[in-house]
Length: 338
Image (cartoon, rainbow, N blue to C red; front, side, top):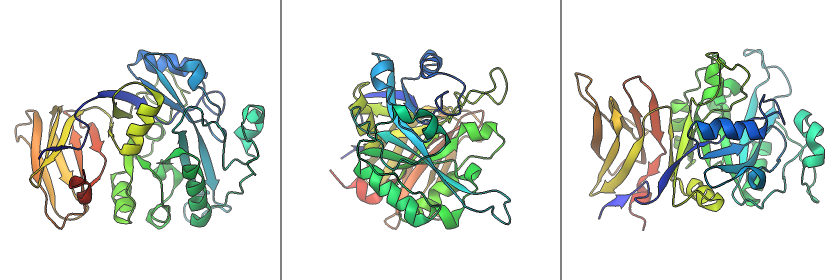
């Protein structure tokens, strides 16, 4: 029986899941961000200012635009790394799965929290003491997930983190396979290898495209909006419908092309796309597939036969300009589940 890995029904909603405003180090107000992204065809923006959870859902959401509540946390290495000559960091975004969940956990006094503390809902939550250790980071992940947040791992290249660091973080829901804001800063923030490293380390996580926009350079090549996004498939543009789709992995990351269908039947995966130059399948091992026409004419479909020894597969498509889109990883035991 054919199994749809991206849901057969529903609509795709274009989303930016990493965003900064004047409430931290961005240049636009939350209202200006809404106008900018809504006019560009986006349906969803997660407001993830540094250090503090300031909810925007109630004031900004309408029938055509959904504001998700969230924030971004920073863990900083205490000393300058002797080879990299910087302090490494770990950044994560936390997106509330429920619009009424506005209590901030794992808060601590830092620059942008301090200037907005009067807006924070801390209740009786004690201050968190972050340390740049896997133990502290994993404790934070566990606490915010228990509190009802979707956890994403951000821009590992800009953060100067490598395999020895990020493979020790566990429990995150997704990672940024492309962070466009960091691309605009000159970093190669195309994190395919990082994603496979995390998957092979045992973490079943998705992959996102995000802008991480600060909007500091309008009209310049370094303008950091509309370069990478996540397409979420859900029944309707509703807060819980969107966050449930995120939790279920019903999305893909893109910088250009689109997935129309990903399905499985009789040991084979079929993907249907917008017109693309290539379709690639990878499994984290040497079993892979690559499809396209030698003359460069576009294709819109490919089928890949899995092996019993495959652990997972994921798909990367590229358009005529080389712009990619990435499916999340699908594990073989998902294919037989009801």
